[in-house]
Amino acid sequence: MAGKDYDHLFKLLIIGDSGVGKSSLLLRFADNTFSGSYITTIGVDFKIRTVVINGERVKLQIWDTAGQERFRTITSTYYRNTHGVIIVYDVTNPESFVNIKRWLHEIGQNCDSVCKVLVGNKCEDPARRQVETADARRFSDQMGVRLFETSAKENLNVEEMFNAVTAMVLRTKQENLARLQHPEVVKINRPKKKPPVKKCC
Image 1 (cartoon, rainbow, N blue to C red):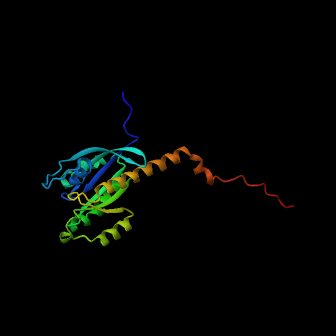
Image 2: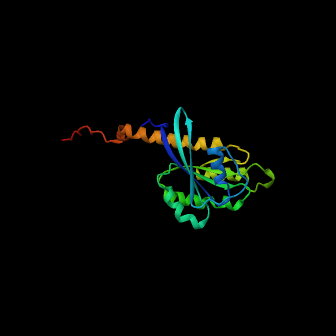
């Protein structure tokens, strides 16, 4: 059997309210296509793409989850073994931005430690924008999550966003491996033997 054609395999999850453009972002990144017609994702869909980050070949398995409440029980199982989560809102839909807190809470309940990015999609039409960049930036800074604004339609910032989250996951994996390979780093706080105390008299 031929050797692996990648150095790392990561699972990314795209979550967010229905209609924010999760599937469009995935299609743009994986196939470089865009469809204006909106089709609801039933349950989950996934695509694969291999990228090169810092000389490492990374195979991405990107899961696109359904945003509707009725599919919520299905999607919770897909958090398992996830390395990175992309939380998407629609800059023309303030409600989808408000709901980010709920999605972050859900990630916290289902994932121990995972890389996260916040994505404001559909930024191609300034006239329709209802979520200001400054407000989103303030919120993302509070949450400690990096913010991207994208347009799947115009192919703005999509590649950069996926590459950034992949680089974050790769760096986390390398840091974890380094910790495992050098356990002595953890032992530096081991108490030293105390010198014998000279007792008086």
